Image 1: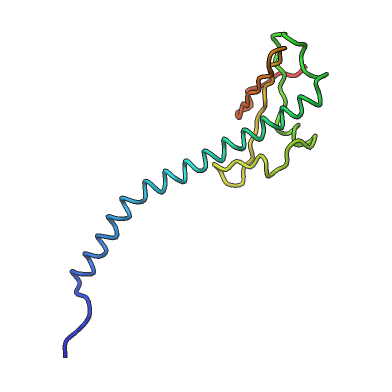
Image 2 (image 1 turned 90 degrees about the vertical axis):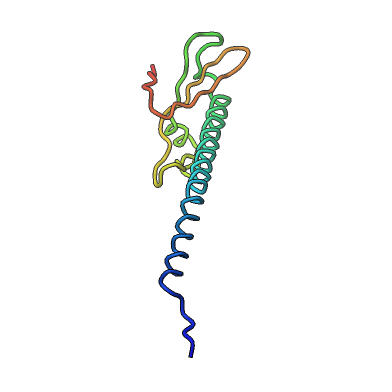
Length: 127
């Protein structure tokens, strides 16, 4: 009777082929995951800026005078406390179990409101 099993050489060849395929596929999958997390992060930042815009519309009296050189800072925590953001809105998709921190800087003049998110608390001074 004839043995119908695989030889050691055949098994090694299959393992080597699977390893080579893994080496080819892994970098592209890893890059896709990284890009996905970065895109999710950018959407989170857009959500924070939108919340700051909504806050600015409802609190125009707290913003600096029109055409002044002053900036106004509002922290993500303040936006959460005032109900403009929820915890799910500020989860950092790049790191598990962390939340976005920092400030939104509002520059205000008669032509536009400019919003910039500083994710590392840059020490915005409030008066």
